[in-house]
Length: 92
Image (cartoon, rainbow, N blue to C red; front, side):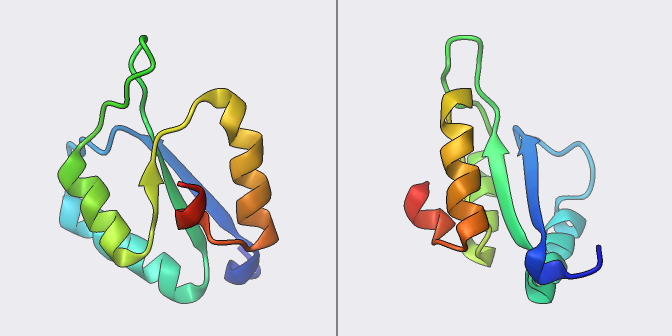
């Protein structure tokens, strides 16, 4: 990564970490502090219902890393918002 301010990292996950949640949050904070835009795109069930750890999503949101679910057809709009530098949380 040559310029963190020009980097968008999208984590696709249910946030049900089998590892160290504190380490994940510390790394996300480090990335955000460097200027990286960070989004957690939450998992959807086969029926389209968001399935994720609400606690971890809240903790990420509190760091300034939006965590939300969207359908695949919304992803291009999400990328447009993020790459323009608009407020990703407002999109969420």
